[in-house]
Length: 154
Image (cartoon, rainbow, N blue to C red; front, side):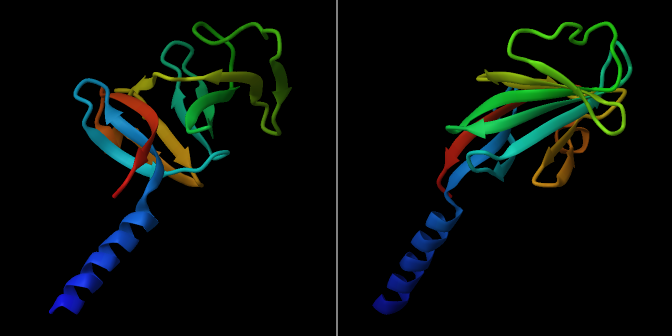
């Protein structure tokens, strides 16, 4: 019996160690409740894409995990208009993608309080490790979603 208990304890510790690490954590911006977590490592990138509410064209914000913090690294536009960046600032560059998209990079800006309000007309889509996650389905329309990189020991 003692050996069985030891095996259970060892297995539980092993599973905790295997599952512990840093996670991109999506929380309800009002209550702090967790919507979901996704395992991340330094250098991993993720993006949030949506239809801009004012100029009605697609926009994608691209982020990178660095030192267990979230940094914005580029924004991809498909049309200029009200509510989107119209000038390239010092240190930033503008390039064009193969489908005509405008890619502004060089932000290198830490985002300690990154959040989005999920659209009621169009969805916000999180893309991480090739997986697309509908924030409307995960969190609900008009919800505030706060993003952070957190250590979790499961």
